[in-house]
Image (tube, rainbow, N blue to C red):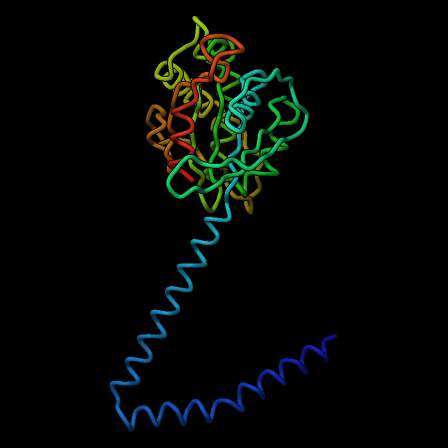
Length: 271
């Protein structure tokens, strides 16, 4: 194998060497005829290389078309998933695997995204997040606004991990916290949910930073949320976290239309 590789390298070198005299001759001829012509050719090549590089970066970003719907069990992720795709109400149940489908964005470019509904069960959610996070263009973290008061600690713990994972990605995804089930009387507002989550995440940050480290000297230290020495706020993060209120079920029961217009506008914006 080594000898074959060396032969290929030798052949490649000989081919390059065969063209080198022609390239040198062309450069000398251009300089003799018009020195400014060589400068123009070099500048044109630089522009072309820049355009190729820019297109490559754009293509990598555009290949990330996945929108991950994440959250605790019974937060309403799956019904949101169904409503976005069909506009219809459907009874749902706790899933143990992911569901995905192409979503046609309502914008002037008529682009599409791939919605991926990830399981919310405690034993599965991190496993599926790890599997799909690299393809994420955006993350929609769905919160049950009606049950938020009793679930706030569990919501904050999962959100903490999702944020840490999102910050570690090369292409940081857009991030939305969708405060669902606003049709229920006891639902908390998006503003209150934001304030409560900031307090809980601040407590988590302090607790985890004080825990004994199991990392050896060669390991990379985990990312930290927010600014050290300051109370945590979402505005401190390197990615923009937005909040909105929605209702997958709607205000008139099963037969009513969903209140997800703001979510649809957000998806159109990040597409």
